[in-house]
Figure 1: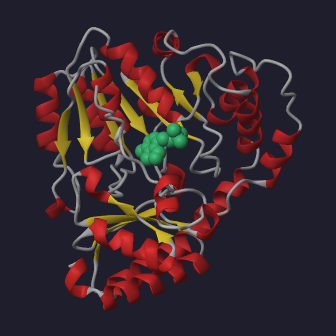
Figure 2: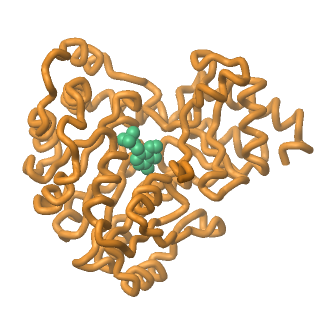
Figure 3: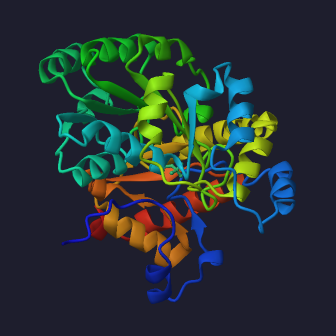
Length: 361
Ligand SMILES: Cc1ncc(COP(=O)(O)O)c(C=O)c1O
């Protein structure tokens, strides 16, 4: 059976080794993580975890903390080993007897992968580049109402396009999906959005589940942590597919400490906002088209993304995300980092584009 796991950002240690590079000398713009890294409060909390005891299989402390922060009862929350685990658990729960399913595309590869593991080929609802990758919601709701999918994934803001759907657009999609379907709203990057709307009222519709990653906003991708908020019966349905202890004790402690340190997330958002403005201006100044960003990454049209990425890595030790796996071989995605790193990226781009206009374009 071929290995059909999706491609992701992040450094590839095998590739770096082949290029004679060490991970610690490469600046990684290919993943989109809080540029401030791990909060000192989280670092302190994880040092105090007793590794000789089993983790709480119910994640009680973390779910209670989530409940207090979100204003929902703990039985409407489920914690996962990264939001990726939750995406797969949801697909297991909803697609075990088959589809149809739909995915707002181009987007994060795990939705499609999770559907395919259940032998369901999801319908890609592709946004057109001409409309700055915004979907035509009237058209989409019509399609959803016809398809009556059991499962629909929307990433908001969307990776990699940065499209941020408004509340009424998501509500219209939820209505079109109907009572027999489930709309998953993945808010992995929502904490980096400047004017964010609160999706909590959507949960009352009854067919919406919210999935949030804690790895981006709290700078913890290596730890794996995410959560889902949904009606209690849906949480019970999904939870049946989760194996005991999937969320380790270190991640649980980190989650509690992270939620109790909202300033860290807010400071990260402000750093991102400043560097994002700079990057957009400079990238456009280099003559490249950049889709209006809403979160902590930029989608930039470069011509040949694979060639440009490799040149940036080889010559300047900066890594960007080649969007070929999203079906967009002409685009790169840049995860926003602090100003110093951002300047380094712009210098690198200026050099590589100036040097190899013929081979890159
Ligand atoms: C949209 C989206 N959702 C979920 C994830 C997975 O996050 P986690 O680290 O919580 O598994 C990613 C990671 O890239 C993502 O881009």
